[in-house]
Image: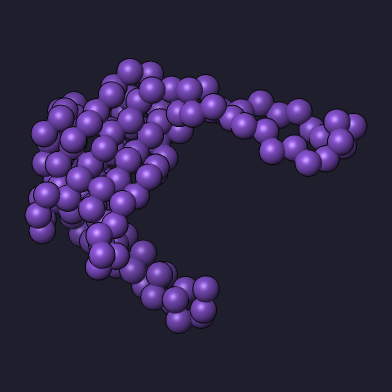
Length: 134
């Protein structure tokens, strides 16, 4: 990654944070709708999806991680999967001998919670799949 790429990334991140802080009233009104996560729910941007999931998961006491991302020919994200941070099963990639390894536990316990969100049109992002089971 070149220095200009890093500077652009940092500038984009700062702009997103400022937009979120400027939208504090929006977020307060949004908290009333946090209980409503369902197939067909609509969002206006990927940023709104992230803010919603941050609050939704925090209120329920679990974390999420970004999963698969699909982009169109213009390199614009069109579909994204979000998973519980405990989704999946840990696969050891041990290359050292058993005497040199540290046995650590994994947080991956095959949790089923996930959500797929697709971009239907500009400014329209829809929940296509939602499994709420932990």
